[in-house]
Length: 291
Ligand SMILES: NC(=O)c1ccc[n+]([C@@H]2O[C@H](COP(=O)([O-])OP(=O)(O)OC[C@H]3O[C@@H](n4cnc5c(N)ncnc54)[C@H](OP(=O)(O)O)[C@@H]3O)[C@@H](O)[C@H]2O)c1
View 1 (cartoon, helix red, strand yellow):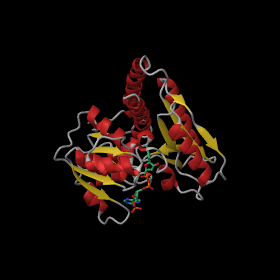
View 2 (cartoon, helix red, strand yellow; view 1 turned 180 degrees about the vertical axis):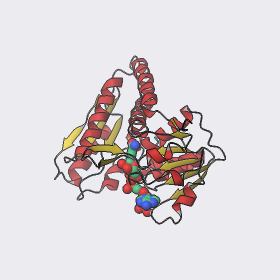
View 3 (spheres, protein in one colour; view 1 turned 60 degrees about the vertical axis):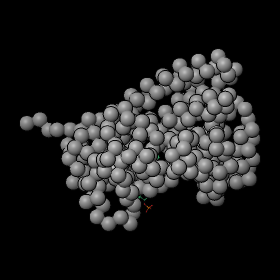
View 4 (cartoon, helix red, strand yellow; view 1 turned 90 degrees about the vertical axis):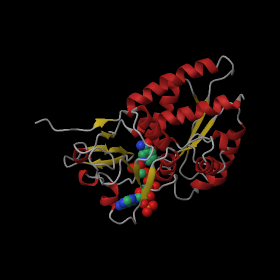
């Protein structure tokens, strides 16, 4: 007998489709706006994972025709120095998006820095003004990862209205904006976190289950409702039993795949969508800069 297995939500394929659409859009807009769109990714210190993410983002920019104004600062850079750079970029008419790569070294206050970014150049959608717009249901720049998840669900025609959605994780980066976006799509939303009791029973209620905890493989097949849609936001580097390093999600793929109807792979699911939405936000600000 053939074992049932979930259909994969292919974020890599959809991201590359979005990249193509953006390339065309930028070429069209550039006939009116006499410059390419610009994105400044600011990185502090030498965290290897952050460096890899920054390289990825810059490569994606190059692919679609966005100019990169990224800057890499030494570990001991001060808050005041970074604020001054952000203020300059806020005024720089070549720059449409500014992003501070997180995490920052511990002597820096990330939230205070994010608030120095002009809300119209907030490519990551993490400024209080943009998060407030999300809460109020107003247009604005949306946080890249949860918006990427919404776009992926839409691509596969996953119905959300009236469905039970459970978001595991409540960070400002992922869990909270994710829950608000699902709510705006008329799902009935439960948010779980590290103090949640009976997580298994709550998760098993979900038609749509989003895992964003940073705990490798914590969502197992027994916590998933048969036929559910499971989105794995987690990106965790682990060393396997053979001593090899590899990326895994927050979902235990092998036990969940036979239970769920849809599942995102790691890598190749939510990760590429996050980058695609970052570029999309930059192009949105670029277009708006001329209005
Ligand atoms: N795919 C992408 O593009 C992308 C983008 C961003 C992040 N990520 C990945 O997504 C994951 C989450 O990132 P994050 O920034 O949201 O992490 P985070 O800021 O560390 O937040 C983790 C959340 O998980 C909750 N949590 C921890 N242990 C739990 C448990 N046992 N049961 C239920 N909830 C628990 C925490 O609850 P408390 O609030 O109670 O502490 C917290 O709300 C990480 O693997 C990260 O690498 C991926």
